[in-house]
Image (cartoon, rainbow, N blue to C red; front, top):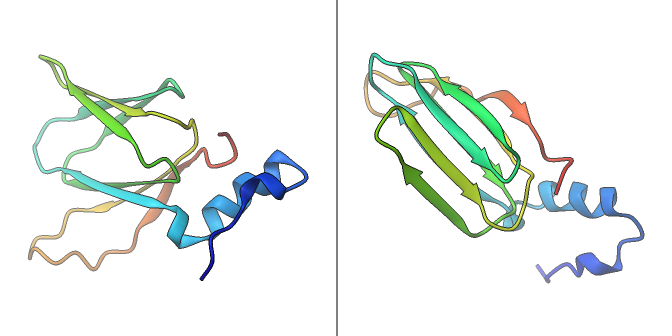
Length: 114
């Protein structure tokens, strides 16, 4: 499969839509809160606050390939998408047996912004 030249699209919305329909363009980051306490994630540069529920796995899907994570002294993780505002957040319950076959459900879709 050849590379897509995104700069040939006539409008920005079509360019962004194309990014999320091509799996080769996407990065998936999975993480879980296996504690009995709610955790918090602040996502930059979109300025979105997320509450990570207990015993829940999360998945961020984005076309950005560069990230940074910072842990503060409390319950908050700051997650930086370095070159994009857009992402999709999915969640599912933590599996008790190690192999999670629960379906991902959409929690938040910010894929229409870049």
